[in-house]
Structure formats: C-alpha cells, structure tokens
Length: 301
Length: 295
Image (cartoon, rainbow over all chains, first blue to last red; front, side):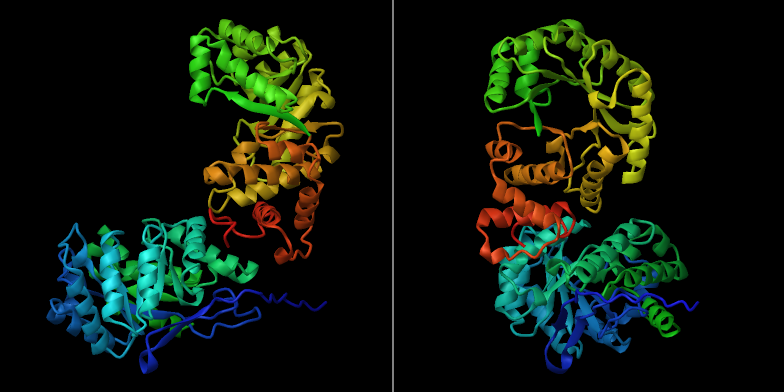
C-alpha cells in the first residue's frame, strides 16, 4: 500500500512587516507555515534576517575576543555601524545603553541625534533599543522617533508600562514598534491587544525576551514556538506578528562566552540557531563570526 | 446544580479572626447570607486547624447550625478536625475531602463510612496530580474501588477533578479543557457517581473584576457535561441565576460556543459577547490573556 504523507494547510499568516524606507527597507514575517515545515502547504516569503549590535558607548564588560572585530571603531557608533554593514547584515541594532539612569543617564536629545546619524550612515534599516528603563525610555524613544521622523526605524522596547506614550510617538513619526513582554505568552498577547488599540498591528514586532543557552533558552524556544503555533495554526490575530530574537547581549554575558572565543561563538551560534528553528524572524547578534557561522549553517541545509 | 457556599473560608482574614476570637456574628452573618442567596450546602473551610481542634470545630458547626438548616460541608485535610466536625452535624454532611493519597484513603474514607455521609474524593494520589484525563480517570477508579470496598457506594461519592487557574501561561487552558472532558466521561466509567469542583480556583490570577465571568461561564460549561455540584460563591447573583436555569439564553449561547457553531458577534449584546469570548478561552479556542474580552 502506498503511503501518502499528510500535508497540513494552515489558516493563519504572520503579518509581513516592513522596516526602513525605500531602498533601505527590509521585510520580515509573512509566513503561513510553521518554521521548517517545508513538507506542509504554505511558504515563508522572507527567510530569517540578521542584525549586529552597536552600542552608543564603549562597552566596559565585553571580553577581549568580542571587542576584537570592532577595536578600531568601538568608541564611534557611526563607524561601528558601517563596519557591521561590511559584515553583510540585513540591519543594524543600536542600543542606547548610555541613557539608562543606572548607567550614565545620558540625555535623550544626544541619543536621538546619534540614532539619526547612524541611520543616515548605513544603507540597511536601523533597529533602536532604548535602555529598557520604563520611565526614561518614554523620553528617549519619543525623542528618537521625532528626530528620525519618517525613517521607519524599528523602535523598542514598548512595554506594558509605557506602551501608550511610546506607541504614540512611534506611530506619529512613522516607525515600527518592538512590543516586549517578560517570557509569558499571556502577557505577550495582552500587550499586543492593548497596543493594537492605538497602533496598527502590521507595524508591531514581538520581542518575547531571548535567554542564552544554559540560562533559560528553552523558555524562549518554547515561547517562540507557541506564538507561531497559536498564530499560524489557530489564527490568533494578536500573535500573528513577526518575532525579533535579541540574543547577542544575553549570550556574551555568560561565563562560558567570556572564557574563550570559540566557546563564545558556539554559545551565541547555538542559541541563535535554536531560536531561529523555533521561528524567530530576525536575530540580533553580537559577533560577526557568529553571523558567518550561522549563515554557513543555513546555507549547507 | 448543587451549590456549596464557599464564603466561610479561613483564608479570608475576617473569618480566621472570627474563629480565633469566637465571634459568632461574623460567621453567622456569612452563613445567613449564603442561605438566603440559595446555597444548598455551607462549606466550612477551616484549613489544617492545629490548635484546639475539637473544641473549635464543635463551636463552628454549632454556630452555623444556629442560623441555617442547610447541610454542611466540612472542609479540612486534618482527620481529627474532620471527625470533630462530622460528629456535630445535624443534617447528613459532606466530607470535603478525601483523595487517593494513602493517608487520606486510610484516615478519611473510614470516617465517611462511620458517619454515613457523602464524601468528596479528589483525583490526587501519592504521586501528586495526575497530568491528563486518562491518568485522572485511572487514579479515581482506584480510589473509588477502595471506597466501595469500605462500603461507600458510588452514589455517596462526589469526585473532584481539581481545577487549576486558567491564567497559568501555557498550561491553564489545557487543564480547563481536560477537566471538561473528565467530567463528560466520568459518569460512563463510574455509573451513579457524583462530582464537584472548587470553581473559583479556575479564575485565580485573573483580574478581580473579571473573575466572576470566568467562574460563571465555566460552571455552565461543566454543567452541560454533567457536573453535579460546585463549591462556589452563592453571593454572585448571576452565577446563581445561571445555575438555577434562570438565564436560558446565555446558557444556550455558551453551549453553542462549546459546539463550535458559527456565532455572529455583531448581532449580540455586549454581555452575550463577553460570555462567548470567555467560553472560547475556556475551551482553548483562543489564547488566554488578561485582555481576552478586548481582543
């Protein structure tokens, strides 16, 4: 008797979100099948994309082997971003660490000006992360949105504590939002429901928080997997957004990554590979050699 | 639907203080309010009760019986407190509860026989909470067989599948669906058996103002699948109306949602829409979030 493998066709479609403007733009999401289900019906028009990190201040706690590829540009975020571009990234992700009240409490104006300079200096789209301080970010991200008016940056984190103010600024100035919630699918959906009342859902990207291998990665994996299943299989409109996995910083914080370079690259690489298998649409990495490693791994499929 | 009034509960600070200080009025007011609201039993949840056990139970049971003729549900894990309570009941009480745990089987079930009362038996075993419907059925069949051997007939046994909060990320909705299924097949595997649930536990973790909606909807859903009784809040008027069949339109709408029928939300009143959306969450058709009514 012939065996015919069952083929699933799903009803949900992840919203296709565009970041950046004109020839600097990038599309993520848009898939209507689960990650790597090549055997099912449906397609993924925008395979996974990669960004590299740029910090707005010279990093103080990076191990030597993480600083090394950026040594000549590490004090200049604009040159640093250009260097990232030379490594073949799809986007650059600028972290406004210095604005954190617990770090330097740097002014919003200066951070916003830097974001604009970086965005103008590169020919790929820019992702901008605030410090994550729910109060300070209202000021910082609103200013970034305003100064970079119309550039359609991907801006976050938008949190349940500040989504109204930050969401409004992002919307008013034509950007896209990163909605971030703490590793919990119910909270993730709640934020999307609330944000969607004041913000178009096709301009929302989900950041579920990405933990590093050995430090809770399986939670991030299960959550990303579940968001995709709920969205694509049960067509839950409030989980049908693409996912950003911001994992570089988490991986390079680990003792294992700091110990030596090879271990660091593998730590970041294994985390990245796992989360993209779970269904992440865009990954933020730190080390250019991890990027190369992951691209080779995907290419060898 | 038999409603066991849950409001005399030591987790409530006022109740715990009243019991400690022998303040009869606080307890009697709660008993009277629940009786007037139409409860069928009054639950006395006294917790572990480690001090002055016998005397406290005697006082509590007599205090409540002073103002109500309703039968009591003696709710404790402590067999000494249990016996002290059962001993003073004027009406045939409910022993709440025993389980499949060895200690509970050996200490609680003989009390149910001795005092010839109805008994709640939960699906818990020495291994903890059975993870799925099949293992729940398996564990309850074992414990019920044990009770039958002691001479307790199925008709006197109220099975508790143990409800868990639907808001627990990842698992809560799976549990809600499993317990609906469990109640549905229970009568087939154990003919004549009754059932009960700690209804309010389902809405633990849900924003306070939305908890009643979860409780009411789930009660109707469980009721349709054959649930015999629930430990619940009889002071929730709408819950009581639903349990008494006074809101057939809402009940029918919830049933239709359970069946997956096409429902045109725009043709419904806001209240009807809330019930449909809540039933969809409880059958895990849509993902739970605190904003489930808004999506």
